[in-house]
Amino acid sequence: MIQINELYNILPIIIIIAGIILSLLLEIITKKNKLAIFILSIVTVLSALISSFFIPNKDIFVFGDMLKSNSIALTFCVIILFSVLLTFVSSKTYLEKAEINYGEYYIVVLSSVLGMLLMIFANDLIIIFIGLELMSICFYILVGFLRKRIKSNESALKYFLLGAFITGFLLFGISLMFGSSGSMKLSAYLSMTGIIKTPVFLIGFILFTIGFLFKMGVFPFQMWVPDVYEGAPTVVTGLMSTAGKVAAVGTIVPLIISLNAPDFKTLLAILSVLTMLFGNVIALAQTNIKRILAYSSIASAGFILVGVTSMDESAIRGIAFYLAAYVFMQLGSFIIVSIYESNSKDITDFNLLSFNDYKGLAKRNPMLGIFFSIFLLSLAGIPPFAGFWGKYYLLYVAIKSNTVINSNIIWLSIIAAILLSLVALYYYLKIIVYMWFMELPDNLKDVKISFNIYGKIVVIMAICGTLLFGVYPNLFFSIFNLVIK
Image 1 (spheres, one colour):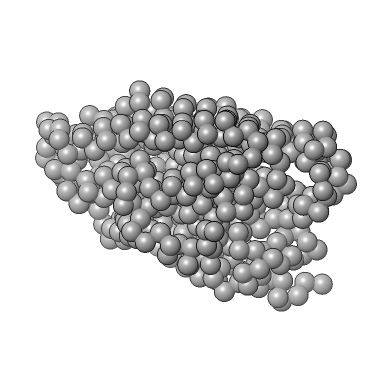
Image 2 (image 1 turned 135 degrees about the vertical axis):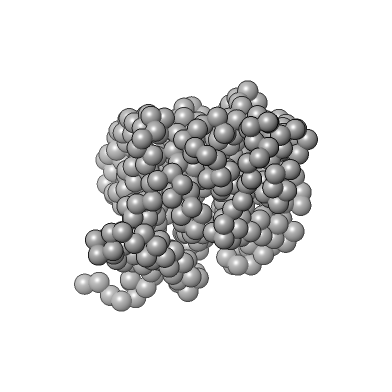
């Protein structure tokens, strides 16, 4: 029988479920009043976010050990919910301009959030699978939400076909892990000494991990990222590149580190180098802003793997900080792109995302240019912004643990991360140069850029997070009671 305290320990999930049900009812009752469902969605996410800080910060298993709650899960939960909150606030104007302001949008996003939370709170492989598929199906819908745009439909179909194919790897991996261990529980694997060295379990775990590497955009499973990010509504792209990635990382990375598989170090280090190399080098040839940010997202996944190679508990803290900073700077960048699109005459015109159309952006709206420049410099890892400390902590945990086997390949990933960060700096600075030092195109000289109260709130929140965690990074660890040792 379900006890009240069990529900309390997974309160964010309960609130999101209640929000979905109420949103469905509200959509039926007030079909023409989109403001009501917009406010309800924000209240739901905000309530779930606040409730996360009142749950005991210790290991708790509920519902027959199907779900678990601990400091790691709660930390990733807060990051995801904050990302979704920013996305909701910034979506209203964009959806209205694109003529897709349907109540279904908020319901589908809330459903994807439910899938994300199930993944990070899961202690059972089936729950992880259900959560991952729920998130994925919602993303397939959201990517194709611009139904009249061929590019959006193409992206949705491509994402669906590749995602369905990867699901086969995931399920086959789950069957092998269960067959070799006799259990679906993640906590049971941690108590089985040496289970990761069992050939059948190891193969299954690799196949299982592939499903999450696909969602993270790790090489060679990154082929979907640029096209899907480009074709999806920009606010959806921001959500996928932040909350979606955080959910995947928050599910698989703690498991990899807890199983402590030294043989994985070499593989993860190689994948991190290849992912950073692919993302940063290919980004140099791009002229489309969303594709540049997409390849930047791929490179960021490689940077996360550098921290994972340490196989140390402190790596989770460093990764959590990096992802928190990443939410502010990456989502902030996409929100500014969406604001620029919303001020265009035709939001379906992808030419507005090219370098040429960003010429003189800062002259048309200096404040928007300053904010975008800060986000880009933070993504490049320039101090004193949060992105610098995020990369620093990942490199720190990788170097600190570099006293064990395979040290040469680990150092290769560390050096590659530093050198490729310089490559990334080039294409970030290129955007900044176009905004500040290029002349306005003749067809845009009379076009003003403005953003309403919703855009201002979100951009200011993202800027505050980028600057605050950059100037005072220990604030993050104080908030989540996580201290790097």
